[in-house]
Length: 419
Image (cartoon, rainbow, N blue to C red):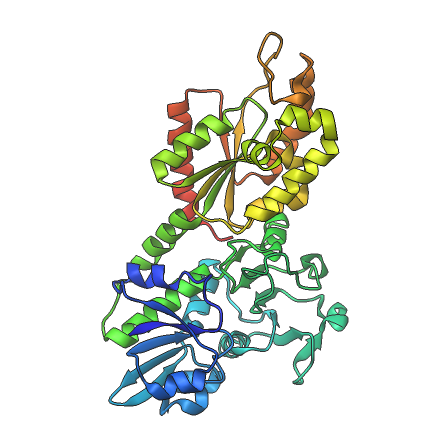
């Protein structure tokens, strides 16, 4: 038996990743008693995750020197009735730094948390000759710990490594008690969370144009090394890029944004069919939930009530994956809503010139009752679409060409995307 051992694992992508590395029977093993599990020795290789990376140490017969130095193990191999412990998170974290072309040498590094992954990051910083290392924590335990109340003392930080589970699925709306604005000299950030694809912190980093990456790269690389240790074989390095892209393609949502009548619903349905993804039209979904048409909601309850329904619905689907989401045109005006859709989604702006609506059927488009309304909406919303989009597509062309461009740019972004 091979698998991942932890307390709550429904969020894990590890089985998918190990399948791509040639092991289709990788399992998720939830346990409340790690000691009993290890003592049974009923496995060949297991990866260890929260909260057991440090707790497993007393049960191991042999601990790799690097894992011993870190004080945390994430890979255990059962061989000759003995348990061997390794830390492959180290090489995964180092590879994630390399993907950002970021060296820790002479950097002022802040690590959030003090768990197993934080210890791994700390040793990596020492090995890479960081100028200073501090841990940002709620409760100080060591001389290098700094409490959140003392964050002002860390303004000179240049690299942030976020190792806590804050914001990880299913607690998507949890946030750390600080902002990246408090680190004005930041040149890079790594977050070890990979579900969701983008936490609030990664969204902030993107907005501030700080090079950053989530935990997926680290996860794939550490899985590769774990498989190599377990199987005594070398996996080609180029397979990392292929696995990263494949996992992104089969998990990420595509969120179509743009003006009314820009083709979001039609393109969404076509994409869902081509890519074998689910499809959601947010306006249709809200109508089904409310048992009212959009026009009826506006007439009876008003626009403000409808906007709240949009926000509530976006929050309710922010955990979804592998879905095409065609949004209502006004969703772009609510930042919390857009951030919810960014959690697991790539936002694609279908940029289309506004059209004269006189004589057209405007059913379900209550803000377009007047011929000039589309132009006013374009003036108001176009800058927001451009600001929040990951990809911009010219929608003033045939659908087939639009689909081809979306496929090309999505392929590129999933191959090279950092956050």
